[in-house]
Length: 294
Image 1 (cartoon, rainbow, N blue to C red):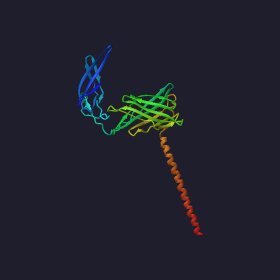
Image 2: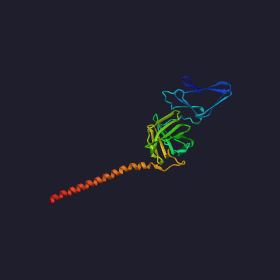
Image 3: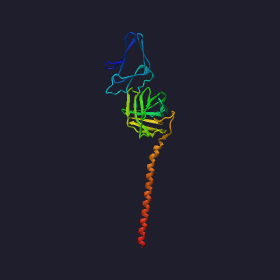
């Protein structure tokens, strides 16, 4: 597909090269579409172009011929077929209402020794780009899971029609615990642009080797200031999977308990200190009273 600028506006010309055994010929169809220069052309409806014995079918077309300053336009020019469905040009709001809770999916990675990684979770992606917030729920029914397992690292890669890859990389630390060390993502946004980000210095989902990590409450994995992952009903085991089943889980509520322990100890020590001081002052007062009577 070739795009030529007959400024103003933009015209669309389509060239198709067809090979039939030893014969090669080119078919050119000129489509008289006048598109404003800074608009993105959208046509989700099926369009059919015929020339000689070549039939071309197009649908879900999103094209911006000339991108200004590297920024894809948010203003869309609809084809006539799409206009019959809706005459309103969609406007991207600065904030979007939160979608419903994502469906919980079960994912696994298999190597020559069998299942080596298990993950169960509902995933919600939160992206902020150009001050526009977007929220996406991952549908496990349309998501593929692949990956790999090594002695010190394990990878779970999720992909779908609009997610090129969403990587969860786990690592072993201190030879006896695992944790989520890295997240990489590359996905196609609604406006057709590609959003990619990576963080290799994370520290989430910490648990002993030979066990799984579980957290039924909503958690947030902050990959960057502009990209977060909300997890629901999470359970993962990237190492030491036996017979394709989860091992005993360490619950994230233990993290809350660990946080409360220092507070409780500090409060107890403060109480003991107050009692000692009270006893000291009471004893000192009695001691002075004894001198006065003498």
